[in-house]
Length: 407
Ligand code: HEM
Image (cartoon, rainbow, N blue to C red; front, side, top):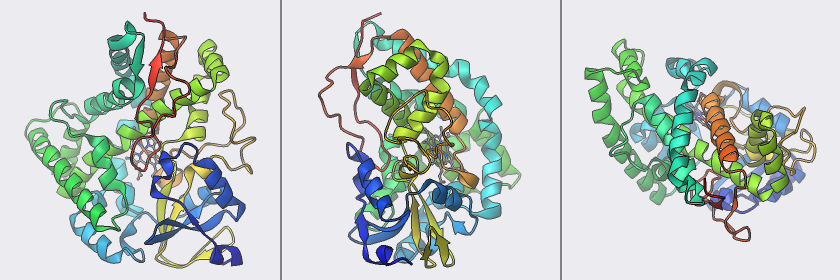
């Protein structure tokens, strides 16, 4: 362990994603070394990786676990979570053979070819949402577009009826937070109860009368005993939570970043061929999973010249790594025509690489491409307004008021 990492503990508040510009903080931490000790709140100190190469190494290393079950300081709460939190049965926190089994059950639904087949439906939903406000000349792009679009696409794919849907984005906040305070434990329990109440009758209905959707396919897998009851509910909840607000934030953050950089907006509008590369750049520049993803040491683990003891939590800082000057030229610059950059890490990397990445990319491509084509003079309604960020651990926008010539 280096002297510096022993003596310096950097504060990374849980609401770091809401700050107008969290990137200088990540940069300051990296200046002390690519692996540092950070304090998430008064009772939770963990490790943080801010270097690109070290993040890739950690994300591909099977010696690190995705399950928080054995982590120091959370043991009692985690034992309770293990018994009651249905998401503890999801692929996100599974390792090894269990992870592969769960991921294989749904991976066919997310291949590039399957997603290409969804493109006409994504386009139809996009057009329908934009039609609602096209003649008005103004809109809140978060409430009227970025949030409902991914939900509509996911609902169709998974087989979730529109009526009676819980507020997934609100519930996600309670589910993803580390359960290290009584308030968070209670919030998580309430969210799980609400989601389970929503999904259980739906799963029972698909079991009886299968349809052409993912939920029915999972029920069939369950009948062959390839997935347990609890794992099935966990899968349904995970897919909705993982695919909704993340994609909404990519769209809203992306449009916001472009409107704050009019030259970049114009370049993309005038050359839609730049769109796929621009989506990668927007993911790099302002990715939704900004603080990062968690891994846990099982044995002492050496990384970036630091030995981390067993039973510790490591935050792999995806946004920090995406702005590592060792890998990205002028990392704080938004450049939709960037070439020769390494793969950005906003979808993670390695075994747990985002299963929904092809879907999120397709949605963002269609959403941004259609917006720019239909509203070529799109602008922020009040360019001087400091727009607030969404509550939670993801980096997203609470609102995005825009204006344009009505069509
Ligand atoms: C995993 C980000 C959209 C489903 C992940 C991970 C990240 C991520 C960083 C890795 C977690 C880890 O390593 O611990 C994003 C972003 C999205 C997005 C930024 C949008 C811009 C989606 C969509 C879906 C989805 C649309 C599907 C409906 C999943 C699933 C996993 C995952 C199932 C777990 C994979 C595994 O554990 O093997 N996502 N995601 N995501 N994502 Fe996404």
